[in-house]
Length: 117
Ligand SMILES: [Zn+2]
Image (tube, rainbow, N blue to C red; front, side):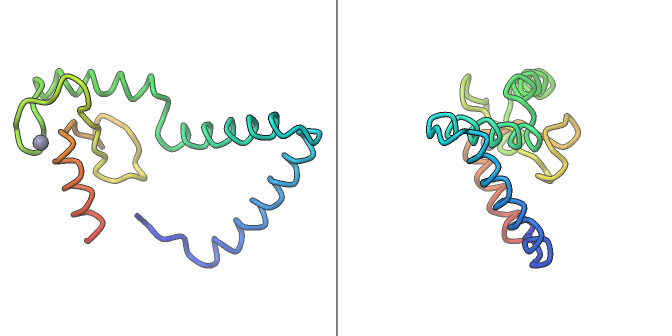
């Protein structure tokens, strides 16, 4: 995982503080609305990075077919449920070129190896 440089962090913190204040104001002091607004924004930012669940499901199906139901790591049969998309580079997102479908154990191993590089 790339580390956020200090200079970038210094820029983002005031932005985050400003967003919090604006959300507070936009919610009109209603805690439930504020809660929902924060969740809504968090989800949209997550979709920016990871795509929507529907897009990822489609990619999984596509990978399942192209890999003929086999894990790209250990070549074992993938579980019916719980096969995981592994990104070679997280920043490149969930594209066909940047992902492989793996079992949970292979995914963990791949992530650990990448973190220690
Ligand atoms: Zn595997």
